[in-house]
Length: 424
Image (cartoon, rainbow, N blue to C red; front, side, top):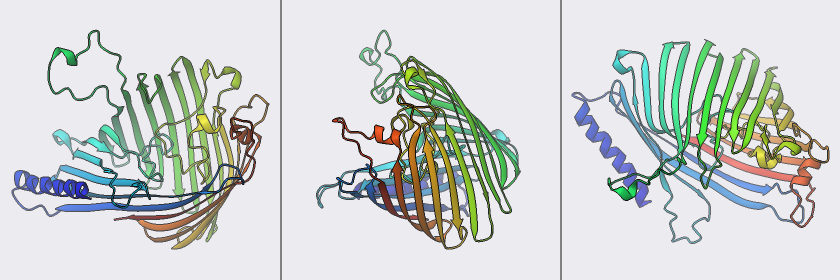
């Protein structure tokens, strides 16, 4: 707590100092204080075994941030966050010293008096939700180090050029001495991800967004060496009673010694009949045949994408390389929204999952999932929801969950949560 208060007052002090340095007159848009309180208890029985008891755990994150406008074109933002699992301290007198600067960046508008904006530092980012997103479902949402240059061609056409650094190439070199510079130089183990995207708005609820993302990583303890290019395009249409979202993507490059060539896409099509809105879901992610997995990689998988909003509510497929054994994923689903825009609403969803290619036993069936979610919305930033999931494992899923000593887990999987999400 002491560390949290120190960060908070440091941010406040910097903001006050910047006011005296950059502003001759008091700024009418002085401060914006914002934050999140997120608590999610979970009952996790997703292991397909009635011989084991469900696991119970609660994840929590609390953040508070300050945004300060130094001049009409210069803004700074800093957000401190604590993320934990209840009881993680193992002692009511122990601290896990878990405060982190989740976001901290400088934003400059209209550089050189042209419609170009710059954001530099650490920040959350979301482009083509399946490609890049903050993953707000998790206890620790995703934030990136780097910069983002925005070119506003017109109110309806905005370009973004960005570079993200996921893993550093070296620690900070504080002294220029020979021992700090290996000769010959060591391989660069950093993880870089530059990209470009633009959004074209036909109107505020109908837009097109292509993206090209290049990811490059040297071999390190956390990542295998790879070089991957993702090219994707999204079309989103939400006008009157229609709700449609289409995504097409292709990936190429190399993962280690394997040649990468993968494709993916989805189509969400919904139509509102007043208080009820059905939606058809089709999602395809290519996979690699078992006979080719030693030399080829055909798995369409986005490292930085928002995964919880795809592939069912129980998150069985957050890691496609593990949870589908690299075989890829096809989803065929139906969602029924009831009172979607009312304070009290609920969602009933049924999905059938298969692999994209067959396993060694010529099986495709991953299983069926049924989700029921009740939601009470206080306003646009605050809600509580309760989710219930049952998953019937198919032959491929049973094989994946077979234990090392040959015991097959084939019972129904259960998952439930109660989520409190309050933003301010």
